[in-house]
Length: 254
Image (tube, rainbow, N blue to C red):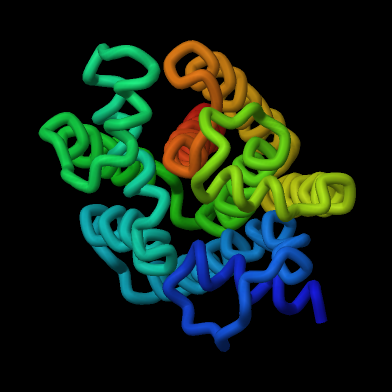
């Protein structure tokens, strides 16, 4: 029952999929971060379904890329893009760590956030457009791996402040079992990617995920002194874009 409650909390927090109500008590949140990648599994499954219909509907390259770009946002409600936008605003301010953390909390959206989101969606659509349609099923592992990596950062990376969503989920998680869950899910994602895309895809995706995490860790330590929920969302979006671009590069070189 704890596992089911944690799954419900993970989907309630990180998706727009309707879930039954449950109390967010410590014991029910123990495995929520470990269940976080299952939201990505839903997105990955929808990508597989989308691959089937995109091929049979003979979508234009433009429609193919646009629908593929908005699909994960429709599932998540844009919660991670919100973190991306806030982080872009904070980074663009060139202020002190304390002021940047204040900007993360500011509910207003700055010009740099809007510009950053537009550039992100253009890059994502551009990469998506270059992915051969017969290889679309392979990217089903990307949203799973990105959420496992983001969940790991929430559990283990230093926090910029003692309050907030990242601190709350980290405090209430059973770190050992959740880490094992995230590692197992990540491995399953790479196994799937290897089966449908080959070793080159596994290598490219793992390198993309690794470089993204190294950048994220160094950036958050230098710019913010630790992570927040917004920064975790920023990392998730960046890692997905980098992994997609890495997979695209593999397929284009074949």
